[in-house]
Length: 377
Image 1 (tube, helix red, strand yellow):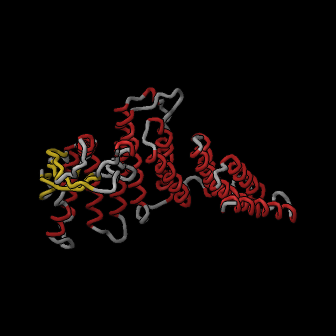
Image 2: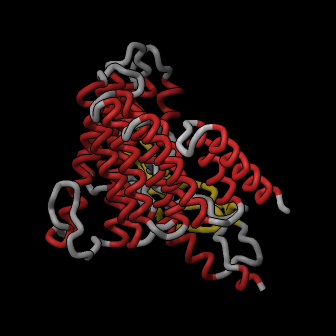
Image 3: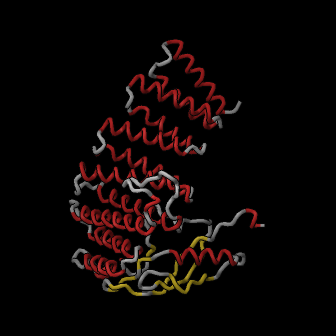
């Protein structure tokens, strides 16, 4: 008998023992059914794992109340299991139960909701990164709902000077970028009855109008992030300048070149202080930098080795004159096309001289595209 099967037998025996000495709803059984569910998952017995976890939820509710926090681990594991089985709607229901339980316990706008919302947001964005397809829009919308809930908590219960706030506003902007980028790549879903959290039907909205909505929301989040950083007890000018530069990045990737230029100038001028040396200020903006927000993995590593690539970064952050230096012998034309396409789609923060964008020759490392095993001969 394998280890997993032995664990299953152990927990089944433990359940029998507890029920014999007490009853079928003994509080100890909630955790025992949780452990049984984990062992059944490890054993590949998903249907019985579902039953065990649901039984654990029932026991927690009977003993500690319908909205007891103790059932949260069971529900999170149930969501994982439903997702693996392809039951995304059931997974989302389990996660919504987690939110409902916490909001009933703490209050929907209580600051103690933030760790719960963090966990739910990570669950959605992690799954989205695994499946970047048009059918993955459920995760996009769920991430948006969670982001809006985070925004309400911060607005109601967390002061701007709280050191956690800048990071949360950065997350809110990242979610808006995720949504806008998804719409750009895949368009809007055509499912009948599907609705945005604003209440507007997706079918009634155009991709450009929807993208503009998320552009405005992201901009608002990044502006609030700057405001929060300024209100921190110990203001770090480099952090402040970096936040302003990220706002400029946001303007740039959404085609607002004039606003981007103004924001880059403000970011540069922020470092004109006795606290910052001339060398430190100049080096801060000396080289181009890939514009990136969390959850955007357009340039995530896709191979174990890197290519050295030379390119020209224009003053608007576009890649031109792309050339692979010393390419390996087995680099194919398709590999080259993949690298070139990836870099052409990437936007860079341009080099800044006295706050003004300037084109520059640049060298960077880019992962060698991963090929299917069948292509490797």
